[in-house]
Image (cartoon, rainbow, N blue to C red; front, side, top):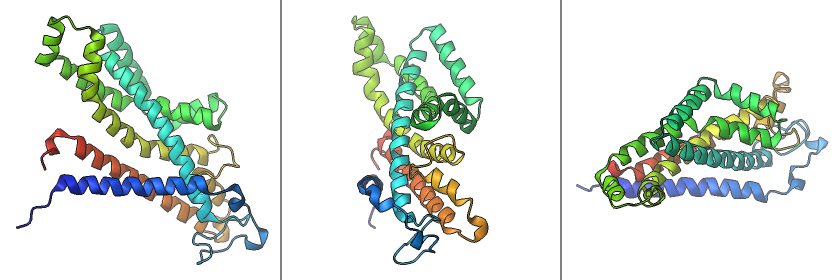
Length: 274
């Protein structure tokens, strides 16, 4: 009986998913602005071999706009997730530092943020900061760090109770030494897994806020803007500007989420010997 090594299979699967996402991202960045220009002679064309996603009401090729929009969404989602992960790491470590005031303050902020629906809070922050990329980034980053912060806090509390940490303290090692040599190496897997798992949520919130008109400006080829523009022409029978970019966005989110699950399985000590 042939035994399949799940760990190697998962690693290969994660590499394939990451490669696919990188190719989509790189191709989106390489698309020139001239290729996104409209042509009224080709306006409103249905999907065909020449235009697999069809064209919009201004004659712009939708597959090129969709890929360009996905690269924009991935960029914003990755930046926002990275900022949120750093906030979560700092907050979680501070809450588990043994200072009751810091723990109470961080816990209160987490309860406050998680008590408000993310979309509403992102929308309010983006509107207060004048919309645009700046407000969108800050809004997404400020609302996606709470769950990871709680996880890191629990992990640090568990690590602080370990015997080798106590021995290190008895030997006179400073808090900075314990943090850099004992805590951070154990927290890096949770950090990276949390970062990747936050990315799908950040992408969806970027698209939803842009769809509502409080995110990126209308001239940007973002998925939310493409979907928002398509709503005007659904009643005229133009279904492809809404359905095909929307399905592509869902597919990319599922790919990123699956890659996060694979990364979590690879870094989980329980599955290390599979």
